[in-house]
Image (cartoon, rainbow, N blue to C red):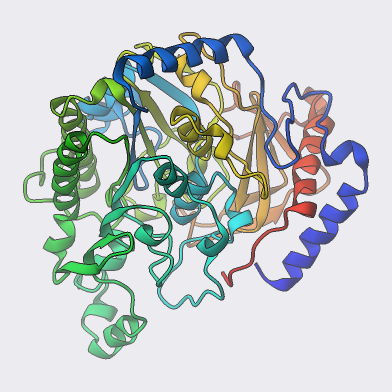
Length: 528
């Protein structure tokens, strides 16, 4: 965020904060309760909270330790890719394992991410909007940030580690690879995977897609001189960081998910034997473009296209990881959450996923930020549930701390945007505790969803087919915000506005109250 934008946002927040009714209060439309000025207001469901806590207490009495927490995060998978969300075999890539988890657990149909990967990956580990941490977009080759954003953040793995958990990240990181920013330096006990996205690894060898790079040694040397990682890395907290395998070919990239999956499966067995609760985030490299098929999965999808083969591969590994938990005897004491870090990158077409919504990765439209969300916990989450209740992936921060019995460790010296959703997930008829989702694109507050309504202050306009990242513009909306009813217009094609809706002004007030939180808790600038 540049200094001009920082001053503008600070000025706006100061003006809004001077109006007492907007600083901490919400509009007449809101039922959420603010229990602290540093916490996002949440809906209160006392009965379901008691029911969920009773389940947790009973399981703890039976097993004698806190539950394991496993996140399975796919890269750039579209909302409509899994069969459970309308895709699967019908669109050329069957996903029986994800579908099985959705049927045996809770399928969330209104799960929201950030528009791109680094913001989401930082938000779920801090419970904070990327504009607050400074991690507003992916850190790419050539970027030189001015400060370590993790230096003053309190990560989920750190808090869980302090509470006796073993914490592991396997797969993609992409939230900084400079010293002090690596997974095993921000709270994880162990990291086994890759710092960047797979495109950043494969582009140096893909001469058909990047001939001006691969076939030009001077240009390739320029890129590589930036010093970005080109290896499979293994690091431990307080220990060594080593390159396990140098990436020397497209084939090395294609087999990356298989290699990391094998590590995860073995690690689960080791963690189970150790007897301590564990937090495992398995972050797939696929299905982020450019996809190159693993030998075992080439042509295994119905479509035979690389992206679809990658979906089939990821789904197979989801099945193997769940099976490993079962074989290790810890499935009944493990909370599993399957999701994607953002919507599909339609600009990679046909090497891209599917969403029934408008937009793509990088945009605030539903196609960019509405993702699959599957919560599974054998014996704890009632099978066959489906809910349109709002769930922001930042909620995983608060929820995981609640499941670990350390909700009181949530920081109070900074603004926490996540909400504890444990009771929503665990109560048999649980309702979401989240009332609103705020959607930012880098340093711009773009939109907000509240109930079935979504209000836009700024919009991304497409200038070329599918090229939402490379050929689009951001525009202010004009005289009034654009207000959509997602129940009748899920593709956000025609605003209902004030002519057909009475809630335009109250929803605008909600966004002002959100902006006012930046007065006391200003955004962080790290040079992006």
